[in-house]
Image (cartoon, rainbow, N blue to C red; front, side, top):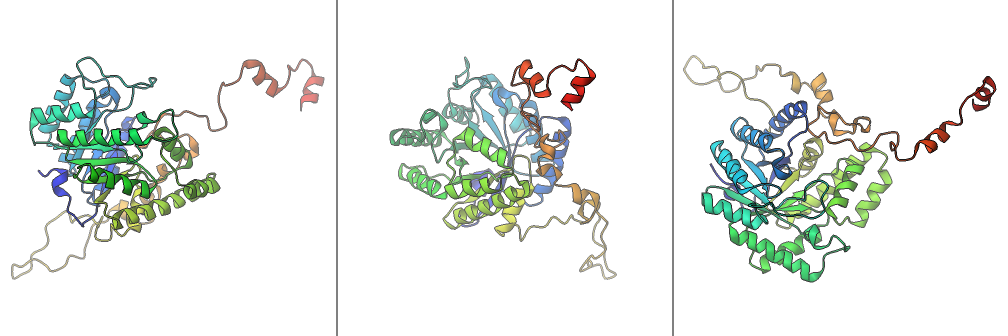
Length: 399
């Protein structure tokens, strides 16, 4: 089976989709349906993330294996160094190979939840370079290996500064080169929204001898709150026009999505025009914004979601196959006014801001939709409701 780097054709832009393991069984079931639909759009590959410390090991392997074997999608599995031993990594790689997975994205990973500093476990890996070297030593060229690139610099270089220093920028660049020299054959970038920064970073990569394909990571803007949290966590630079445009419509979910689709479409169009080999879409387990962007770019015009006939084509009297088959079964999901069609993208919206645990995009609920809970003491909360009602007169006065 081909590795991702072997499938990239210069001058023929592609797209790929990233997913994460859902938190609920219903979410997993719905993700399979979503990936099956999106798989008909023929992405170059799909990938699935790996929970910190192997917290989603079994589910990541299950999803990766089924994407590869059942949906016939070239699948890339993430592996991280956070809280995981060499033995566990070796088992994961063995299982990946046994299930036909031939592409791995090597990452150091973020610090475990509740910790600010990343530290290696005893007997584990110190960074992605060690992980790449281990895979190459154990499996040679069997696996295609991708690594992460950071056009704005890795967050560790400037946690306490508004931006990365020039010295640290080039240190980060040298670290990326070491990952490539260790055996990585592809780079996928962190999300960004400033194309000029990406283009300059690619030029700097080439100037230090990094010559493998560099695939821009694209994060669609689905909701204002989600966008704000993500760029805050990653310290992503947001162009002034984007911030002003989103702030103007932040209370209108539909308007935020429309603005986001148009901006990201324009950004992707420019990336492709200026030489990006393809687009790696961070789907967040959602599909509508991603598909809208690719449709706007004209990248789906030759793709069809029409299912093949569930029987062989009829043979004519002379033994030749019938030229055209115009009788087709009814697929209820494809009827434009069917219930399934009308509800297909309901989970693209915040559903009253609670979320739907059946959605593959479901995550932890951190805020009550009517206000913050239990952040003031009991006396303050009682004061909001007024004093004790000791008599009918008190009740009349209160109401």
